[in-house]
Length: 348
Ligand SMILES: Cc1cc2nc3c(=O)[nH]c(=O)nc-3n(C[C@H](O)[C@H](O)[C@H](O)COP(=O)(O)O)c2cc1C
Image (tube, rainbow, N blue to C red; front, side, top):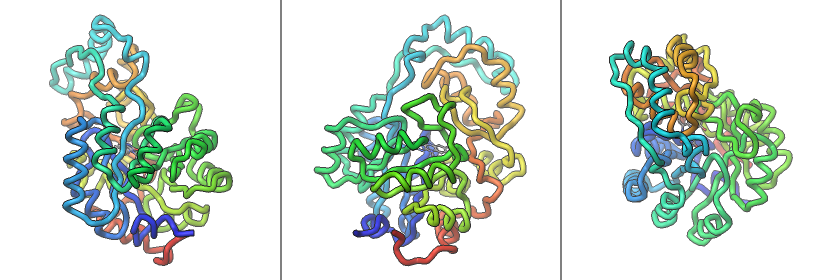
């Protein structure tokens, strides 16, 4: 059977993980693909026309494979039910936080502008080589339309049950993502807090239980980590934090600096920044946010409370547990270094 790497035209089994919220860039995705791995772009906050433009932009920068990524759902029920009064109460709780950062409290923004169904139509039109998704499984119709259009599909699992559900739905590739990972815990069968499996345990269980190729993610940040994932039976790895720290990513320069700082040795999961559980550097600012914020609004409305803090040094930094291993500042160097401990022949 043709290996996954061969099918995707990857010389190296290294996938740069997608980043939502403006942190992905065309340059980062294309650089990783051109270096022999495969780049991704997190599109879950993009409008359909932006998805099409971005896919085209990556295509002009590389002839190789790349991934466009969406979040399958459009928001928590709790968030949809939040009224202006509740939002103002939550913003008032955070007043000391805004004051400290010289920020005007955000205003209530009702409704949710993210529409997965419209975004996925754009993916189908743009036809990226791979469509990856988190927080659920797209409908049967969407998956068969992807197959018809030669778009490979990749779904994220945080538990063995999720991996089995993804395989049963006919998805081509499973991403097994352990709780060490940076970014959100994209659980969809049970609450994320009840689905915290480590990469070592999860990847092995999934590989032993499914027939489709498995990609390992979470806490992998150097060549030895990549080699270990391959020994577990993964067909490739997906790496986020180490690529986020590279100059080609869209992260704020201060965020990149923090990822290399000893402060990043301590990370923890919190649902107070976006409304959903995600991993951050454990900073006094994160402590303050959790102490002050009593009214949890759910995703995405909770994210409106912290959005004004994103572009400044507010002390809220996404990071995975692999951060202390980071050494590289350029994506091409990182891609090559990650593959250094494994044979360059195509993996199983
Ligand atoms: C800031 C940040 C944003 C992320 N956004 C997304 C996203 O929108 N979609 C997605 O599938 N994965 C997202 N991820 C997960 C990464 O693509 C990748 O799977 C994960 O970071 C791997 O773990 P590592 O950080 O330990 O390498 C994000 C990760 C980070 C750090």
